[in-house]
Length: 203
Image (cartoon, rainbow, N blue to C red):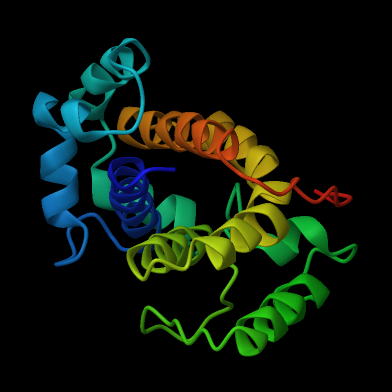
């Protein structure tokens, strides 16, 4: 990627990651929610406008369920999450947190001197954390490590997760967010120089 593409994907990954990770009314996410409800965001996204125009209206569509309630239902509970956002739930045979895939991610982070924690005590393989880590690696011009993170630790399960997430999102904002993430990751994958790892999925 050239510098402009690199910067555009870094911004996109940071926005997507924060919106999955933080409540929409939080200090981190509220400005991003507002930005996606302004059509101007399409000009800065690393995708063709034809793909983005249908999503723009869904980000502003009204819904009976308040956005914070939808985020809590999808990412916090108290009921079972319809699409758990941690990689090991999909990659581990027992569908557990802190599974072997999480440990492999931690070892990879240690091997590459990557210390990245958004501030909450939970597994590092949260979809939001991984996207924000990818953004940080691009911003630090560590493109090789970013490609490894995507190819080995995110893309092998992200497609399945996004499909289940879209099926159960039940709110136009998060339906649009899931589709925007799918399109963005697909475009990003076309720039990768290493193949995406093939891993069995158990959920």
